[in-house]
Length: 96
Image (cartoon, rainbow, N blue to C red; front, top):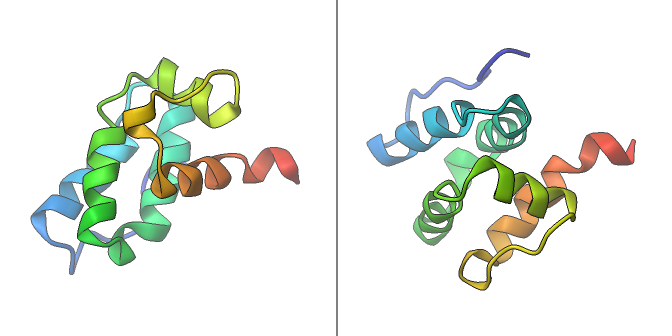
């Protein structure tokens, strides 16, 4: 997979921007984790969850990837239900 499989049609500007940003992180691993999560979930996120995702993508790829893989703790301000969903989504391939 080289990018989004989801159309941005029907999304508001904020969610369209997030969908793009999740697929264009800088490292392939985070593109896949956040991009696939965004493809699956962006349309159903609440405004509060969109806020959380906007904060999460402010983290560096290195820090976010380390937190997703369990190699490092996520700073407290970024912890929350949405991160746990992203983390679970990012770890699905390794659990198979």
